[in-house]
Length: 322
Image (cartoon, rainbow, N blue to C red; front, side, top):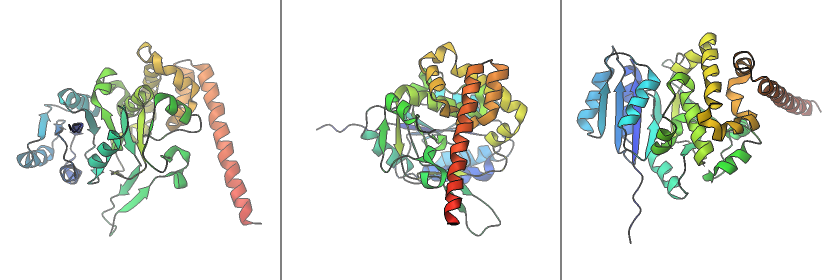
């Protein structure tokens, strides 16, 4: 009897002046119950001790490969550089401030074995607040009870084909947590990797395109933690209104480009996919790209969703006074 070989996994990480958190993050990667087949680290022109921390781990773990950028190229170009070097069946894009729980890889691969070839799998979203003044770390666990249907991953691992995912999106947005995802490398390469023009939304775009094309597997368990950092790359970008508008405009162009025509119609039919971008996206759709009908439909969609939410809150509050 021949046992089916376990898929190989490449963990990718790009770091720019991230030495403060890097030791913790790399320790969690190297303490996995199922060790990754390769770990590709990019030092993106750091001026702190990032490279020294990487090299200290490399001396102990030969699976680690280090790429040194002579100058700072930026997060997405550096991750694409690592992606081109990767050889794993699946890749994990891990940030220098993320924390993988010990069973992350083992459990994810166990679940994947029970389903047909799938574009990616992901698990429940969780944040830890690393406050140096607090005696213990604060955890925030996101699930349907606390945050609504967007975080409902069911009660057991399951696979959604592209058709079933399309139907699932009829009821609500599905929060695909990029820091928890294992993504098929060949699928990612097929769509051109992570689009560098989309900056902090590049992972969202690529992961959702792959899910819509090749299906997705959901694991209703907490397998990773995202560190809450006040000045993270994505938070800084989204808070800078001019930059966010520029990136959202490029996002719209990418979604409705000729290369994405096999999935672009889904975004028109499932407006909840634009939920993370709120009214800023609508302004871009209307003023920048002249998607007037799309902007109008999404405005109505948001107003309707908020009306439903407020009516539920009102009814819940009225029950307290009865």
